[in-house]
Image (cartoon, rainbow, N blue to C red; front, side, top):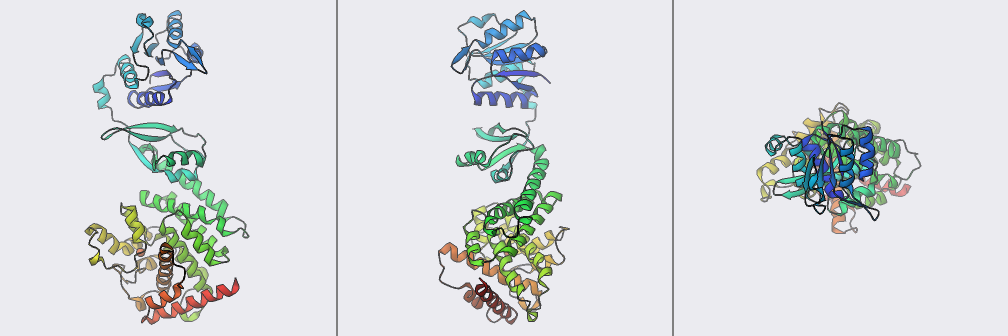
Length: 474
Ligand SMILES: [Fe+2]
């Protein structure tokens, strides 16, 4: 591997040369600010193969004759080190023995070509070299981190289909959320990392999120106001869902989902007043799946607290984790769709007539039609999921076999019925909030919605009683 010292005062040019020489020539680049710094290093490391440097570097208002100094040092010490000088220095460099001159000091491509020539690598060889593959990483993942286990790049479009990747965060650099937000303010949605480092990055993010959830939510003092925990929970929920969609179920994503679900339960159990929390959840910048899932769980727990044996529900402790898992996984398969706006709308779909949705293509319709069954099959592969959660997930649109949208309530498991009601409640809450309506009690909509289905009407009554009881307590 060639060792190349790089001296350039323009940060962008510096980065472009650095990444090209590293990527295409496989060189090891050592940045230095001035000729003096470079010479200090060459005195202890005389086997440096090449120096790529501006002919003159201005630093703190002082201009250094960088190329002159380097040539002198290399000549005096009779080194084999080659030089690529960027910038014409009035013809003074014409005697340069070991090296090449690129006339324009900003011509990074010229410098890369010159370095390739010196190292004996032709343009043909360069073309044959397979460029490393980068994968996009949603910028929000970095909100949960203060350092990265690998180098992180931003992508710049050079021409149609041609991109340049610039290193912006070095492995183990520390950074703050405001550093990430600065990029996002300029419209950046994705950072990039090398594909070969994706798995270790995913594990790192997952571990960081798990630690954060444990510290700030699960192990937090019982007196802590859940309002302070909801934003962290919402952000983690979105990231956990995305991780599962990206990577499927593996040790990291299973652990992350489990911790988020524990966080949802823990926040729900410490909530003293429901209304303000619901409104806070609705106002978060998270996806609607979190909003729907968290409100569904909170409402379901209220009904379970009644311990009403007529409802045929399992004991609260048994049922809580099942409802929470179902809330997290039920609509996960909808996320396989590429169009995120459409996903957001679909979250509010209750009993759609897919035949009337002419704007959707057959693939998307199939996805919506089968999402309950698909998610049920998926969650069965999660060893952490409580027993029979797949039944709730499969039946969460009223269909016994998990396909389509039906009203086979009487035949469903009791927890599936509870889930359906609470999800309908959450959906209506989100719908009214979108419309700015606060005047109508949602329980009235639930009465209309499930009228004529005795097995559901008894649950709607129970929910009404539970909400009244909650009001009396607060
Ligand atoms: Fe669904």
